[in-house]
Length: 315
Image (cartoon, rainbow, N blue to C red; front, side, top):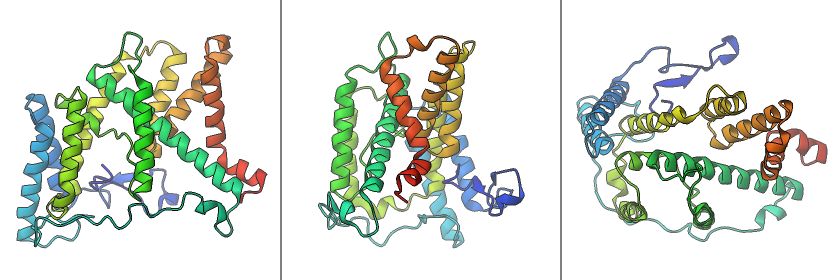
């Protein structure tokens, strides 16, 4: 919703109790917003009809509509990408930043202490790990791949590959190559095996040479796919036992904190801490696995990172 401009932060939020508003001024305005709204309706209509490739069909269709609209009126409010036909469809990717990194450079940076670097690395590792855990479990549940105990089979392999990919992404000076919740869109289309990942990876490799063509897709045409992903993920709440406070409250906090803080890690951390606290006050502390106690302690450090830095003199 934010990417498409359907909701936005209120500039002078200090004078209102509402943190976000509809559109950019409290109302929906402009052709780009019409493209997004029509895209959402088209996507959910195709999903309801069980049309194969529903999400991709919606993106392509609304991109074509956006190109037509933009050709009729030069619109400046599309955002990062403008739906106009590029001068060339194919271009060679620039690999100039691959390998351009310094593994220990942060420790020698002026004005940056060792404690600050260690805490930063700790935060990044914790965030990446639990972002991956939340994504993998959520997508596996949507795909019906969890075992009888609700666990992901061969999770160790998944985490190993994800960690290696994240390191490779950093070495390439690119965005972190970790698991993304958008994969639920593929699951929604029937993806269940590793072969679909190989096909997706191959298409991404091909897309490197088609960047000029791909940049014509505006966020308003692509964002409806994420709305569909939200729906697909939300279907899993039916498995939560809402009559048990030790389960329902942590689940609620996890679900609520994730979108409000823009972080899967924050949501999982809030849920873990709430679970440990509730189990303890109910006299069921022994039911909490020692690993969960340790993880909750790490999340406590994660949430209290600012006062800890001040206490240690890292700031």
